[in-house]
Length: 208
Ligand SMILES: Nc1ncnc2c1ncn2[C@@H]1O[C@H](COP(=O)(O)OP(=O)(O)OP(=O)(O)O)[C@@H](O)[C@H]1O
Image 1 (cartoon, rainbow, N blue to C red):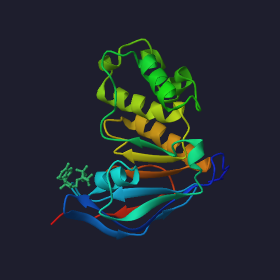
Image 2 (cartoon, protein in one colour):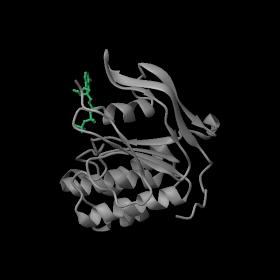
Image 3 (cartoon, protein in one colour):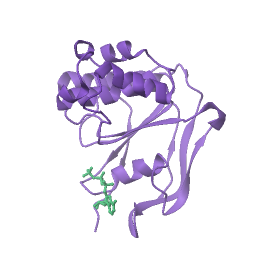
């Protein structure tokens, strides 16, 4: 993989990070260092804490202990990350193209134009439909297109391949490869194979 470093060189690091729910510790003392151009897969059985760790890295859940930092990030430049959770964030009565336009207006028009992002995920023929009419896999593709209309160096993705067919999984792998080649980084919770070479793996354990 050739690194172009289009993004600022930002690393995600954690110090003695302990994540959990309430008093339930799911992952203790995590010392992560995810560098520009690299990706980390979070693996482990249902309930192991993969989503909880992603939410904590995204700043949407407080850590039980320790801290997350984005070294090299200038807060003045705006948010550093995209968090893409289990839910697709699709409003059923909003059009497909309007959905992307909404996200671009909210997160910044720093990436592809909505029509180009739709084409990139193979949804160009659905542009004028209400998003609620899309199939499960198409809605997932639309959620992935959201990553493209606003450029952010860190992608935190929870089960991004859920409901995707083989071609959709290939699109996801290609989006991830390009993002890493641009010097971005990605942390991905998944039970599936992600066809991107060189990804590291963090295995989280089952809850007691
Ligand atoms: N809001 C909550 N309050 C209390 N416990 C919760 C809450 N949300 C999740 N949990 C618990 O935290 C544990 C970890 O859940 P999490 O969703 O992080 O697992 P996961 O590894 O992502 O699982 P999966 O592979 O099924 O997606 C589970 O036991 C779950 O029941």
